Image (cartoon, rainbow, N blue to C red; front, side):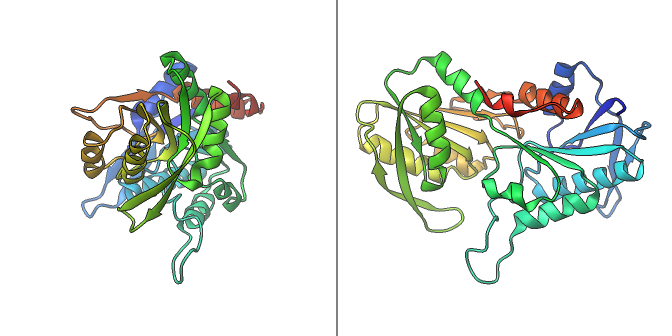
Length: 311
């Protein structure tokens, strides 16, 4: 196999630069422009024939633009005779639409998987999928990483006393349990009722948080409705401090305003997506560039990535 080449689109070039710097390689040259009517045009500016190519592009906001850009880049590389193309998607957009839970709705997470394979992707590297079963939507190998080693290292350094890990909804119980084991602390769950896509009403708590520091863990937050409602419940039940650790900080202006008026003491996110400024609210951004870079190197050298899950 020839040398590895790493390219990036416009979704999160800063993360790609951190990855290449950590690996000691140059970022591949690529032109991405738009026709006057908005169509995307891509040209790879170097020879990649027979090379092992990685394309770093989270499908974050704007998701349609970034997804289409990724598909076109992959198609260009396939037609340039790349030996293998790995789509590195730190944040897999449309991951919430992973099942048919009401009549006449799509399973868009599966549609995106089909589009990536049709474009020419030979492999997928992603992080903290919204639903584990999305891996099964692909007929190509999928390497699914977790941000937990990065979060746990940071949380241990903070030396938070008498903490308890909280799942802000029932769908996150398995992940919260894993964090609780790594941090060697208790577990609690906030059960919620969702009124709409943007409005959530949390209504009950399972577990003891009185006088303790609560650490909520989740894969993503956009409007911060789930986190803020859960934080309110935790405070009402006597939690001393409330922290939130979220892998993908795809937060809107509405979410920022909610966080400012919430009882959450600190929000910890990763740089899988570009993180905007939070004036007046404490946000800590942890980088997953080293983790992704090591996984890409191991994929290139056909080595196991399993050990990256260990602390």
